Length: 414
Image (tube, rainbow, N blue to C red; front, side, top):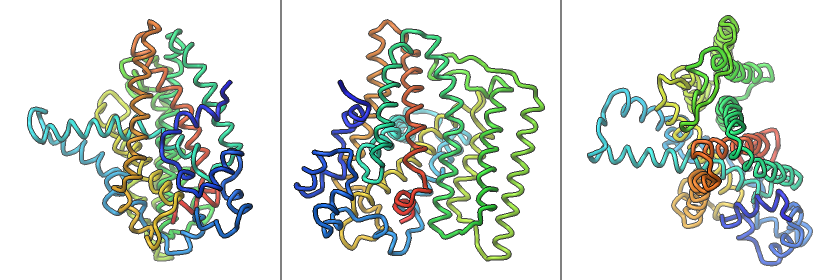
C-alpha cells in the first residue's frame, strides 16, 4: 500500500534531483532512511563532506544578487513584462490580427508556451521541491504526501458526481484569487530583501495589509457582481454565489484605496527621511497585480486573465523556483549568483525544464481525457483535475516558500 509521500516521490522520481549528484556512500545512506535530513546525514558521515551540498549561508556570505535570474528575465517573466507586451501590443493595439503570417505564428507559439509551459506546469515546481529539497522538513513531506493521497481519492467521486466537481471548481476559483495576490506579495518582499530595503514591523504590516485588502476587494467583487465571479472554468459553467449588498464591495474598495495611499505615503517618507527608494522590480510586481485585478477577472477581458496565469503568475513561479533549485543543488565553483542565468542552457537545467513541462501536460491534458473513459464530460474532468491539484498546489506553495524559515530566506535572497 502506497503512502502519500510515495505518491509525491513517484510523481517526480524521473526529474533531476539534488541527491543524483551526491557521492555514492551518502546516497546509499539517504536511501536507507529517506526521511532523514540530508545535511545531518552528510555531517554524521564526515563533516568535511558539507561542501558537497553548499548550505545557503555559504552562498549568502557573498554579496546578495539584486535580481533573481537576470535583469531582462526578471522584468519579462517575474515582474509582468511579457504579460503587458502581449495584452497591450497584441490585443489592444491589434498589431497581430491574423495567425496566418509570421508574427501570428510567433503569437500562437507564445500562447502555447504561456498555457502549457508556464501555467499548466508550474504546480510541479513546488512538488519537485517537496520531493527533492534538503530544506523541506520530513514531517512536511509526509503531511503534503498524505494530502495528495486524499485529493487523489477525491478525484473519482468528483468526476462521477458533476455537482461535486462544480463545487470544487468554484472554491478553486476563489482560492486562486488569494493565491495570485499572495505570490505577488512574496515576490515583492523578496526584491525588498534582495535590495536591502529595510522596513520596520509597522511598515511591513502596511504593505501586507494592502495586499490582503486587495484580495478582500477581489473576492467581495466576485460575490457582488456576476460578471466578475468566474462564471466558467474551461467551459464548465460555475454558479454565482451572491449577490452581496453593494455597500460591502464599496467598503472593501475604500479600505483598499486607503491602504494604497498609506503605503504610498510610507514609501515617500522612507525616501525623504532615509534616502531609501522602493525597489523598481518590487514596484512593477505590485503595480502589475493591482492593475490585473482592476482590468480583468471579468468577462470583459478574458484574454488578459488567461495571459496573466501564464506570463505573470506561472512564469514568476518558474523564475523563482528555478533559481532556488539551482542554488540548492550548488552552483559551479567560482560562479557567483549574478551569473546564475548562464546555467539555464546547461543540459541539467534543460532536463529539469522538460521534466516539469512533460509532467504538466500529463496532468492537465492526458489525465482529464483519460477520465472521460468513466463516461464523464470533458469539462467536468478538467474542472475536477484543476480544482484538486490546485488545492494541493496552494497549500504546497504556502508551506515550502515561507521566508520566515532561515534556510528558505537565505537561499532565495542569495
